[in-house]
Length: 195
Image (cartoon, rainbow, N blue to C red):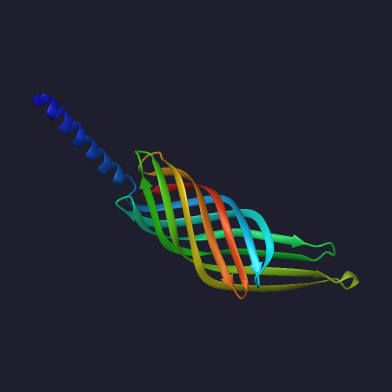
């Protein structure tokens, strides 16, 4: 009877040590990168200007404590969007920016995890308009604006070991200034390395 109690205690203690060991796996510094599709939705002065899709890239580096919550800083390229009309006019806009915020990585078993991130987004939007003037050639106009807004995201994935993981993510980036209200949803695949 006593041996059964000792076996139960040993198994329970072993489970605690395994949990603690796994928590250590995601402690410390990390770098990650994502690639996916950005889906823009924009309004100008309250009027809808449509949606568009393009390729996006996200790079981050940061640190987590107890394999759960930490901070991150990174760069996001939201790609570009181009529109043309039947007269030869062409409008192109592209956006990118820097991020800083909180990053969470929550394991619900030895390998599978869910993640969350949120923070500030210092973005820059560049626009180019080329107007076809027929026999007079074309004229090109350029403008840019920048501001501070926010981003947030969630994801899930698989930790191969204490260093490597892969995941699938949804992120949202907000840009709002001078009547422009642009939201960009990104669906991506990511990889992470922990030091």
